[in-house]
Length: 372
Image 1 (cartoon, one colour):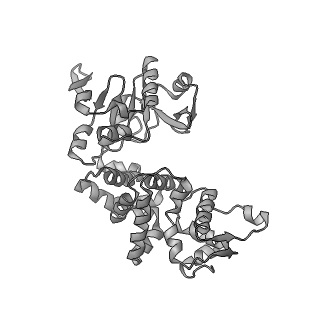
Image 2 (tube, rainbow, N blue to C red):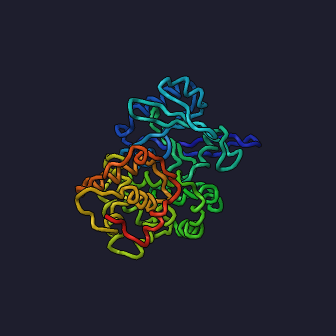
Image 3 (cartoon, helix red, strand yellow):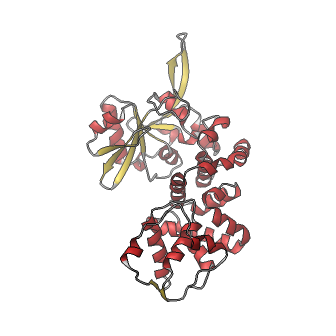
């Protein structure tokens, strides 16, 4: 074990980080993506400190093979873009770089400072960037070239203790970004780690802050959940913590009224098991069980497809997926039951809907079953 020091204003040396060697952190180098390794090496050889960071490092330490690898570097987005021609810059407020290798995408970010607080969008140093990260388990930096883990916040010890510990003070972490409450529960469910009592109490006290989050961000979080291999466990825990009602309020209402529905719903999510499936199939798991409860689906041709679509669309609000994904998921549901959709005039079939609004028929779905 080694330590990283930095000079204080009075010229003294202050211990900043613990450096764990490969024998100490236990990461199996064979589980590290070779393209991610090459990205870090290329950035370092260009003169920029660079690391694999976040959930990938956490999973590697836990002996899991990560699906995604994120990179953080001292290089600016424009410099990263010049080094990797197979990349493009994304984002407006804080720019990131997507580096492409075939169909795979690696996200590279620049160290951010604490100049404007935890949500700063200005470039900084690694010892600033680390204190902007949400939880200690996700705030570890891995250098695959030297095979070392750099730990500024005690993340390694918290992983050993199997607990979710915030990096940002509890007084700020959820007011800065309420979505972190969902992530805290998600990480606990995925890893089997515990949530300290003070963290649980803070989440239950501030869960209402999620009501102000945009549908697009909630949609992103829901898709991350159902694409994990612990979707049912995460949703069950979110529900018990009072958070799932802000992600899928109609589903939670039905779960409260109907225990059988709750069991079926969680069983459907459990069957996903993180397997690589079409995104639309994953999304369909959120409303298929509901559709089963509102009527008898007999083989044949239906004429009220648009009404059924609006009912399904209303049920998953405030989630706001692309219309074509909802269409595909619903048609898959109907097709599996031998139901075909009556052809309509092209204008009606392609007419865009207001994704954030419920039609009169959708508003009636709580009182009336569709005419199937």
